[in-house]
Amino acid sequence: MSLRSDTAAALYAEIAAAQSEGKLPSVNAGVVRDGELVWTGSRGRFATADGALPGADVQYRVGSITKTLTAILVLQCRDDGLLGLNDAIGKHLPGIAFGDRTIRHLLAHSGGMNAEPEGPWWERNPGVSFDELTAAMDDSQAAGSADQRHHYSNLGYGLLGEIVARLRGSTWLELVQERILDPLEMRRTSYFPTGAAAQGFSVHPFGGQLVPEPAYDSGAMAPAGQLWSTIEDLARYASFWIDPVPEVLSRDTIDEMAAPVASDPREGLTASYGLGLRLIADDPHLLIGHTGSMPGFLAGLFVDRVRRVGAVTLGNATYGRVASLAPDLVRTLTAYEPPIAQEWVPEPTLAQGTDLLGHWYWGNTPLTISVSAGILQLSGGLTTRLSPLAPDLYQGRDGYLAGEKLHVIRTNNTISHLNIATFVLTRTPYGA
Image 1 (cartoon, rainbow, N blue to C red):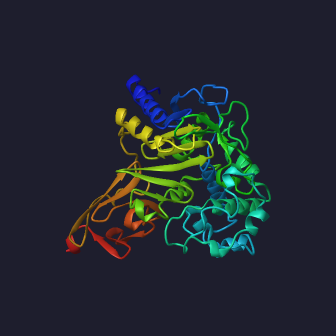
Image 2: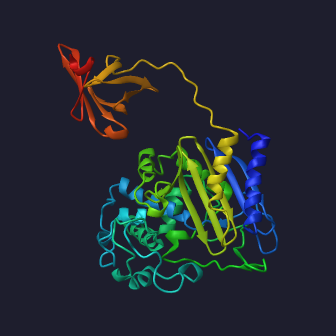
Image 3: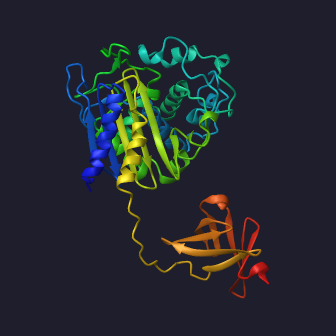
């Protein structure tokens, strides 16, 4: 479904302002809704050195959005039983510095590792081998203790890429291609640019001239930021985070990745980091995704999984509003065209029966068990959704009672009371 003309005009105004105010040689953007790329826009006449215009099929370097693909590979290994998130990385990379840090620490940047590898600035120099990378590592370079705070570490993702490669007996790039890009049909995402591709630029801060930026093979650091992609491919990728492809990751695993693990105290509750994903609180909504930066390139990808919308942005500059433009486009889209609530339809007959429905009391606190979309809903002083596990046994799906078991206690085949996490629920206050 296409967007209204006023919505499209507002989105274009956003990218035009970003391009003008940020002095961006070019900026490319796309908006996703319900699994479809419903709008694309570009501004700027300098996608390439010869002045070619940007477009939805032009490749830009996506920087740290690459990390989200590396994180997918790690969670695939976990789901296949090849590793545990609490494994020390030394178990998989024997003898390495920071060997006591865990897989979870590296995914969430919570292990206190230094942000960058030792040596010349890796983003602006030819990459090194994994052996060269790790030979320069030393525990004394730590930026802090594990589990103290979110401290972004590019180095950690270089290590994660090597771990999945060793576990699968393949290369990181082959795994990205076979296990993510191919299933998601991301045909214009690649290690090096192919076909129409943007030139990375910086802009002289006073003169305003364009200065070409280098684009090297990142070597062992490739899992942290090597990939190139297009608006069309990133739109497919954004749609995956809204509607998971089980061949790649299950919805439950994505739920796990999108839960907060670590944060920066300066950001308070406005932003945090999950397992390979940046999380932005957009009260009362949550945006998940990632930003990207490499010499001459900036990128952003964020989605709202509940409202089923997202935005992707690409630019060829070293600074400017490109990464943060993606959340801004989501806000503009939903302000002009709020998502339509799903139509209510009558509930099907419950396979487990209806004798749990109605009013209950926890002490004298009123509660209600109802049904929505075939799932039992406990609301009131205790709130959770309930999934059936066995006859007269249910499990909380979310909230304080997530994972807890609700037992239906019967006397003479009639419900006497309910018990969940030692809380006794009765049909009358205090069961009187």
